Image (tube, rainbow, N blue to C red; front, side):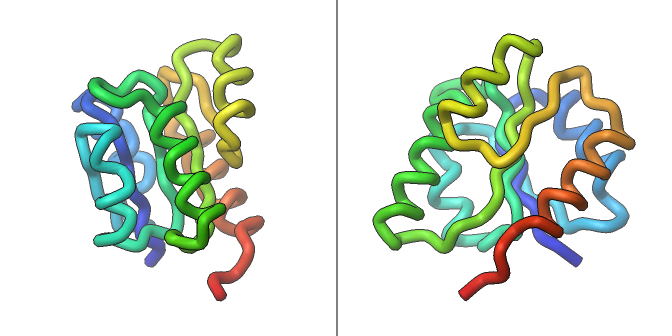
Length: 126
């Protein structure tokens, strides 16, 4: 069962992700973008779901921090899916090097398919 890390301070997003993914994935959650790197080190998730609008450190900054740590060899590479507020935010997802994105509100079927396809496309861990 793949481990997923969800970074959001919005309970409704966590509930929708849990409903869409809970049976097939182990879902871990942190509420602050600033906690993303520490949570990745603790959980070692197969995939990270980042809410673009998460409190103290937005999803874009958190994604860039993850990619920087991966680039420095301090974290194993893993896919990141960003949860966006609107279609225009796709630019931010691309800029932050997210592997994939989904515009809220979350469609459970789309999220489940996107997670499955992103995990399938991810390189095997070293």
